[in-house]
Length: 74
Image 1 (spheres, one colour):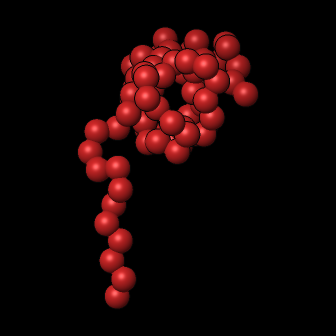
Image 2 (cartoon, one colour; image 1 turned 30 degrees about the vertical axis):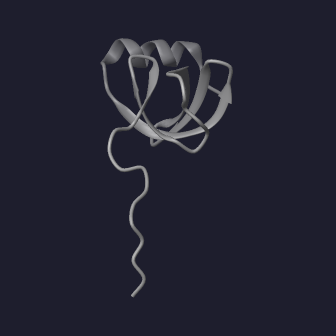
């Protein structure tokens, strides 16, 4: 769970982009596990649990690029 005061301080401190993975959906809000901890933000349409996302300006956006990395067995 996040603390509103700490969330506000983090938002006012700077506009940083975090990356993480969606762990839960609740209506239009998602919980994203990041290196800084779990954050709850608004989500764009089509995001599902397990998706890699970028968190910017209080919203989660699907990461651009490859969704699946190739696996090679040696």
